Amino acid sequence: MRVWLQFVRFGWEQALSCLFPVVIFASLALTQHVQIPWLPRYDALLLICLAMQWWMVRSGLETRDEVKVITLFHLIGLALELFKVHMGSWSYPEEGYSKVFGVPLYSGFMYASVASYLCQAWRRLKVGLVRWPPFPVVVPLAAMIYLNFFTHHFWIDVRWWLSALVLLVFWRTWVTYEVGGTRYRMPLALSFALIGFFIWVAENVATFFGAWEYPDQSVSWRMVHFGKASSWLLLVIVSFLIVATLKRVKDRQVSDSKEASIQG
Image: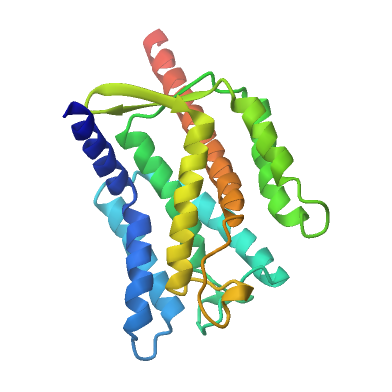
């Protein structure tokens, strides 16, 4: 009975952490069936995302530091979207005033929602890291994974080599979290795989509601190839590494500030 109760508590905390992504999916479904006169769908989605972001900050669900992280992910996501759409990996076929080089600005919020989930879950579940690799290892690894999304169009795709490198770097790293006052832990690599899988599921939902369109979905919707899960796995790894690094830098700054105040 306690195991079941803990599972429900864990699910509830996860659901609360997914508030921003849930709003995006609900908006995709709503705007597919409800048209606003003189306002294209992509622009309506952008306004909804902006309003949601404002409300989360205003209500205290997100801190200003978390908004900075989310904004960073918005910019990283838009840069990737601009390149991928230009290369024909996917497209946004509908019209919109807020499209830049074929990419609607709301698309950056889909990446930002991943960062929102990570920040929310980190705070709600009191996430901790055990045997985290040093900064000079983590940052270049994240950079190489992100750059491979661009370079594999012109060079060999090294995603599987990078995945093996991730396992090598993080094979001793554990993520700890708290549910109902009890601490649990799991291998960090397993958490990467689980989050990546669920984002792949979410991608199927998003494409079904027309968030974007792959070339093989131009005639009718079909399930996204499971091979795309590897891309989301690597994107999750980049996202987690960035959030974890920023969190550790922030904690170090707070610790140094407290130490300085005590010495003063």
